[in-house]
Length: 301
Image (cartoon, rainbow, N blue to C red; front, side, top):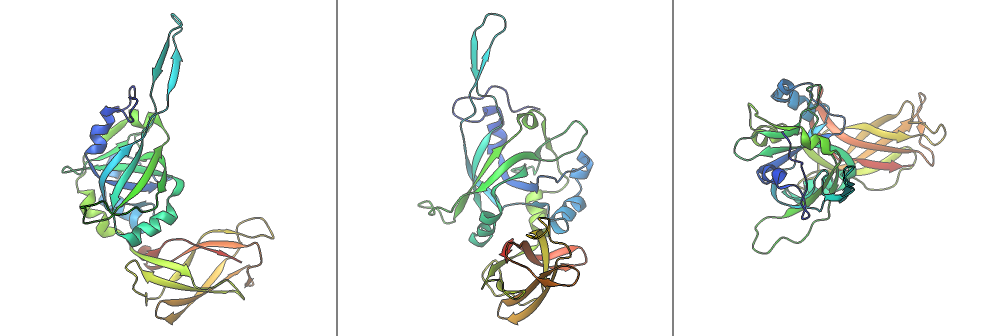
């Protein structure tokens, strides 16, 4: 099925609008996430693994509305008579008003700053998911760059806050080959209940002598009291110019949401030096399953 033909000057193709208007939610995957087949995409267990173990799937709460953005003007010249035809063919870009709580959106603001992700649209009532089907039968979602925009004032007369998420889709061919996959479960109901609980981590001082003090809270602002581990997401060793070799960490719980993280490198642990950095998160896990997980924290030595 295709929702891209010739785009109109006001924005996305109306053949595509009817599906996006019917969406009640979006699912976001990391750019590398994929499902081997339609059967795999329909498996709640496979979605659970991506949500709770690989952290490659997550979703905002709901869509309040959307705005389309103008398409790219293409001028094509006919080989037959030299006449020109102007079209608006191209992947749609949308700005979505989503409903979620402010604390979660603060984390989204930090995460979604133009990076590449894959998107699926969950349809109202049916729970069908609009995604592209690739030639090998795999499903990956629509590739796009996602920007979380700064919150605005609550619209007059509205009882809840909405937030804008801008998605610039990258591949028109994905919109030529999408399907509405009928799901054996409702993603809007089943997937959020499997999401790890969110933590917020922020620095409470500078890194010095291997240590940095941080504050860890649940997303509603309550100081966290549990045991956490540190996970390295990305790092840089200024001496080698490579990712840090043998990164190590330990955590001391000081109470009332205050923690001291010890971050070191090398097989015989030493303090990070000027120019080194670590992008990390804190989490609690049961076996391979994340129970609590934070957003990212960048620590510069």
